Image 1: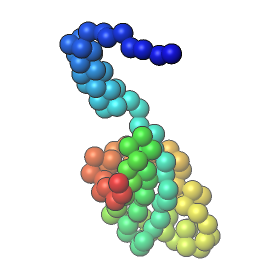
Image 2: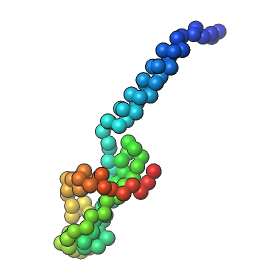
Image 3: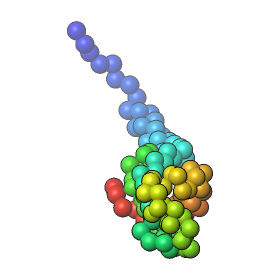
Image 4: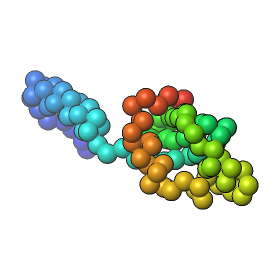
Length: 107
């Protein structure tokens, strides 16, 4: 047998509202987890970085122009992944410094 003892509906609405506000604040201030999907050289003067922020389920890409001729040649000659050319820390710095201007490509 089950039955319900009524609580105070006014306080219940208030605390549900406080919970909703606090959950939004928690989501805004929590750490973001970044998963780098790919880093490539479309040309000798351009780097394309694609990554996903797992907490937001959002995908981004950064296109940076510059003089990357040496890295491009090494990448083309060895035909290996970009991780042999650029250090993980370099990619992290590029993403951290350019995340605000990155283009959102996914949901």
